[in-house]
Length: 418
Ligand SMILES: Cc1ncc(COP(=O)(O)O)c(C=O)c1O
Image (cartoon, rainbow, N blue to C red; front, side, top):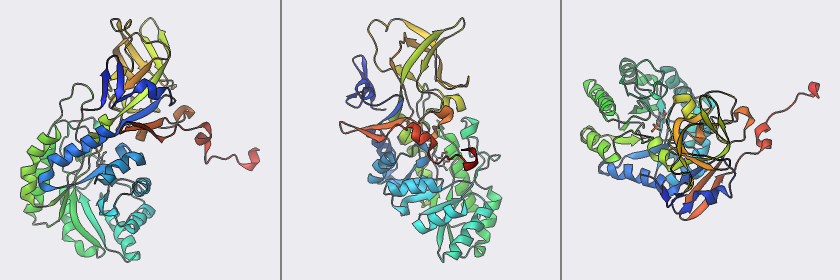
């Protein structure tokens, strides 16, 4: 469920007409519903209330500091994967004791900053990384909590680019290596190896792979009598983009709670998409339409530099007109909605049935709140879009549209070329 709904023939965000926002904010822009964001977070919290897990929102899915602040203020922790995300987490006022840090390539300076910040856990992905954290912790005379990311070798049945829990990916460590690490804890005098972590992939719509991975980890811990305090079961819950029928938070909890309760461990969840995905859309404007012998193209001002998921993963995002005109409603035609970027892979939707579009019409690309702006770029020297949040009846610009000056910030021409 989300708060982007038609009232009459106009699309609204909560109680505000999106066309009115587009009158004030240059397109394309991302638009978020605070209520939807919070609803999804609370749904998960409620579903798991029997074990009061720590819910660490995955910053990579949407890293705007206003979004992070909204969740942090309501009790969320954060899952980070870089020094930049730690910087954002701190600006959002996150409690360091609710920050977990994953990622296969943490740099020494990033590790040092995170130790100094006093984060809850490093989720460690290799033996060399463990050595690096030990070395840096020793030099800072600190003891640091680490969890070992296990690669449980399960098939999450999602797009290969976002499947992380299979044995052939770069993520986590195999059971044998994890066993070896727990048996040689003396090598790491500055580390408390107190947790295990899994994250098997993203946009996973059924519970089987989660259950399989959780069971695999718990029976591994039992078999080798490994004692830890925390089990981070990752993120990855799928959402509805088109015809998916993903497990609800309630169903997911019903399935895994009995297993987790028996384990008597403090549970951490790190969802991104489930919380932010359907709380945002991309609003874009029609620049031109073009009919060729083979296709009808609706050329809009938002493209793969704004929302790369269709080009990168052939991801489907529903596209709807922001205003349905009476005269056009009956005359849907099959079109490709494409962006202005000079790549034939630059599209937002192919073979879509839309009412006849005209120059200046607005389209909403739904379900764009996760991995939307966060993955956007300046390709083709296009300033990145503004981000707007509707909250309690008000419209807030939470990131202004970039300017041309922003595009070249940090660049310089060598003296010899002047
Ligand atoms: C370690 C880790 N945790 C959590 C997430 C969030 O995943 P999702 O947005 O599918 O919930 C990701 C996404 O890639 C991740 O890599």
